[in-house]
Image (cartoon, rainbow, N blue to C red; front, side, top):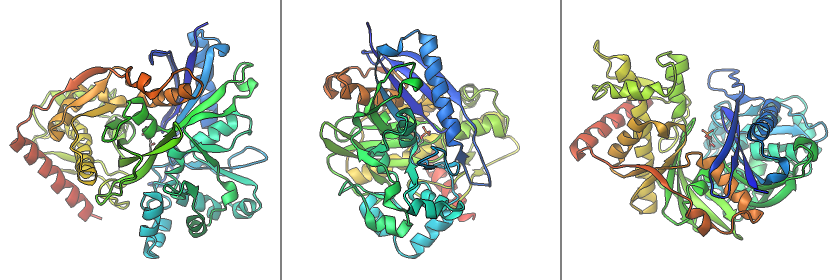
Amino acid sequence: MEKYILSLDQGTTSSRAILFNKEGEIVHVAQKEFTQIFPKPGWVEHNASEIWGSILAVIASVMSESNVKPEQIAGVGITNQRETAVVWDKETGLPIYNAIVWQSRQTSGICDELRAKGYNELFRDKTGLLIDAYFSGTKVKWILDNVEGAREKADQGKLLFGTIDTWLVWKLSGGQAHVTDYSNASRTLMYNIYDLKWDEELLEILSVPKSMLPEVRPSSEVYAHTIDYHFFGQEVPIAGIAGDQQAALFGQACFSEGMAKNTYGTGCFMLMNTGEKAVKSDNGLLTTLAWGVDGKVEYALEGSIFVAGSAIQWLRDGLRMLKNAADSESYASKVDSTEGVYVVPAFVGLGTPYWDSDVRGAVFGLTRGTSKEHFVRATLESLAYQTRDVLSAMEADSGIELKALRVDGGAVKNDFLMSFQSDILNVPVERPKVNETTALGAAYLAGLAVGYWESREDIAKQWAVDRAFEPKMDSDKREELYSGWKRAVHATMAFK
Ligand code: G3P
């Protein structure tokens, strides 16, 4: 009986269940979108119970549509939108507030206060992160401070916190396991990535009781089993957990120091494996845990761009310039350039390397001759420019000049974008055959734990290129375009 690994990829806008076979190929995919809640400008929330429902729905669809039997599932891997914070009641299993999403800015006031008290260096030295509303810590504090009765209940040990991985494992296991992995813990602003412990001093500053926090475990091991009524009568091992960006690094087989990938999802995240050494950044990058596998933890440097694919969604849904996101490629290719138009999609502030929560988006260089094609092209180009900002920071911090960039995520199907990306970076861009590298990474982590795959060397052999985009732009042109972007960003930041 052939066996498979089931990967659950709980992303910012949809939940997916993907079945993989031994060759690391996709056998079947089921996907379900869920509600995005915007209670106030800049706030983004999800209903964690709806997320759980969407996961049950995609499990049911992938199993029934693929005709794979539950007993053929060797293990389940979980990967998730990171940082998004859920607080729930231990007894009822019900969230006490919506999940506060990574993109949400509702805790920027708390962050301002913490920075004003001079805590930035302390958090950076312990967590590898900086004080920003992006990370979970201030989101948990906000929930405890703002939901009636929450703080008392938390102090009595009646509430649990988790990022989405923790929430899903807890639900899938019927409340048996309250766990997370190193990669997710390292995004909370509460976890010491050097001592590998929840940090008492930071918890005190954030007023978060330790009793709420999950146990932190390696990224590849059996944490619990699914309870049979969630899995068609089977108890399947839940055997892998990683935050989606770290999972993508694993799925791209970036196992050696200096290898990097860039994922174009809702946002865009570039991670470089730095091996067993944590590299501190002087250029606005984050130092983060990549994973714990084979009895050791490895680190990564990360550049986080908050708006990438969501800028294309904005063209489609907000401005109604596109019927489908995929049409952006043909519009952009109809013109030779943007004729000087720059779109800076700072809808929720700017991440690496600027870290400015208060800045908002802007468009520059409009003329009477500006058409939809120019506008669409400028929006796509903004993804490539932001990636160059990140890559420059990464090369400066790591001292490693990148030879090639492995890419994945929805937008890499866009050949125009990939080719422009390669031009602007002056680095070859490699798109792999399996584009679902986030889900694949979680599958690999689970498969390694249950002996479905033998070793990372085995996995690395499965990585294959679909297309490599080589840089063709001359350097004067490249630098002229990029300097326009820099001017646009600085002008945007000046307008607050
Ligand atoms: O840090 C946020 C990131 O994990 C979200 O990823 O793929 O949902 O944009 P994605």
